[in-house]
Image 1 (cartoon, rainbow, N blue to C red):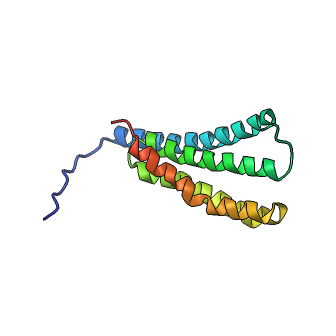
Image 2: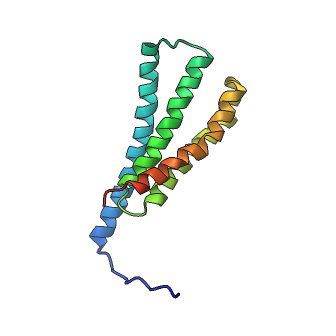
Image 3: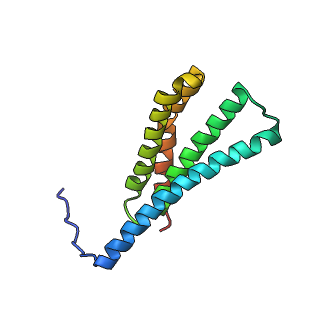
Length: 137
């Protein structure tokens, strides 16, 4: 079985510029999605009776992981082209921020929190698959 070459369709410069702008916008908005989901968890916490302590820290970590899944899924779903690349870029930014947080703030948080933050990175990458799978056709 031989591969069939794909026809080369030249893009106009306006089309290329539009794709670049939409790509950057997609990644930026995905990072806002991460902040909105994480912020929603912090906003809901007092309603469910969570004060300070380990329970609240676990709650916030859970919402942060959920925000990472939502952000990577958003980037992959709404990317103008190459959904896995867009989701991967957002995931890489999340991973870099998580590693930086573990390195810089690791001693300020319990050990379980830092380990769970880093171990949750593959879970957040699932959003890439979800977003690419449910793209509008």
